[in-house]
Length: 235
Ligand SMILES: Cc1cc2nc3c(=O)[nH]c(=O)nc-3n(C[C@H](O)[C@H](O)[C@H](O)COP(=O)(O)O)c2cc1C
Image 1 (spheres, rainbow, N blue to C red):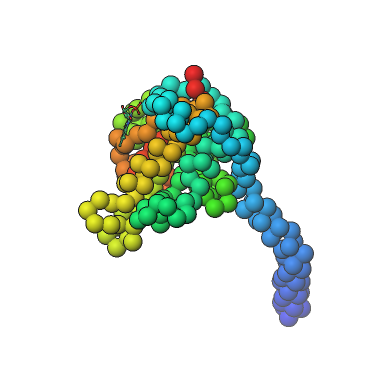
Image 2 (spheres, rainbow, N blue to C red):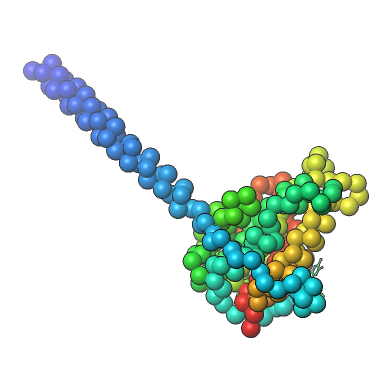
């Protein structure tokens, strides 16, 4: 009698194991498809941006630091601003070429501040011209607090934050002046010129607590934030 019960118990365990394996085998492809979809969904492809019509000369004359913004802004202008400011550079920048291309460009987008882009932290994929979701949620208030409570950081539609590796052994370091800081200056000014041409407003922010900005962006610990650039629509 005991032997039969044991036999039955073992038979049931074996049967449930076989059933679980079959069901896993059947559902595995759809689970894989679902995870592929999740990865796809975490990339926001940016529209092909039309060229900016304003001449560089006009943009240089008109550029100003602006700290008051309207929102939301449209995806086309976000796309134009990012491509014109951060497209990887080829020859012609001398020593800065590699360093310019290695700067990481992150965005912190506010709630309902950019049409088609949910609030979150994004990495701008400079080669693919797309946004990769890094963290979901609105961090503009936290970022403003990390930038000594400068209100325009929170008021902006989004903030661009440039990060680079400043470590001693980094090949980006060159003599006394750290190349990434020069690169931040170059890229920041490109944002200003593109923003003027697109009817957007921006200001670069150099006053912030590095560690608090790093904590918000959850970047690789070797990376240092160089600049915050607050951007919004012109009032
Ligand atoms: C390295 C650097 C850091 C800056 N940091 C801040 C900042 O933390 N907050 C701010 O409101 N403006 C900041 N600015 C913007 C300057 O205040 C602004 O460029 C300057 O007043 C000249 O005005 P303009 O850009 O309209 O010509 C910074 C500018 C530079 C170049």
